[in-house]
Amino acid sequence: MAGFAVNLKVVLNSDAVFGTSCKRGGGAPETCLLEDMGLEREDIEPFGYEKTKDREIFVWHTKTSTPNIVQSKKNQTKPVPPPDTFGYFVEV
Image 1 (cartoon, rainbow, N blue to C red):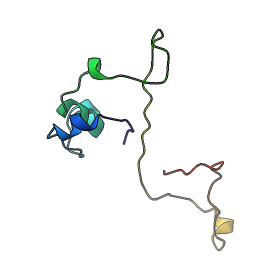
Image 2: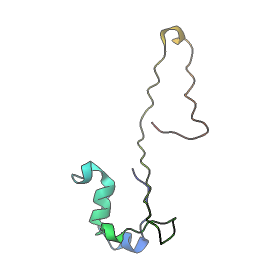
Image 3: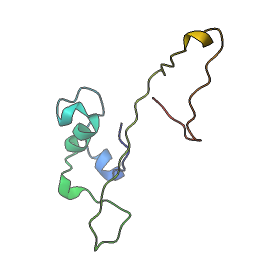
């Protein structure tokens, strides 16, 4: 799932639905959601840089799943500690 902000008026004036049934945009539901809201590339306004410079849009994608931590044979009877995430909460 990508993170971005959409004006509340656009959301309330739309019948777009967020789901996993999207066939466009490589199956990414974010593409369908934005297109179904009637938004086009020209409507997108990235924030964070000066208006005189080209600006980029940064999004993040997450996927929730059960971690698969493989135990080595010599440690089968001992619990395996989770990998170090350097203080970040990580969903794999």
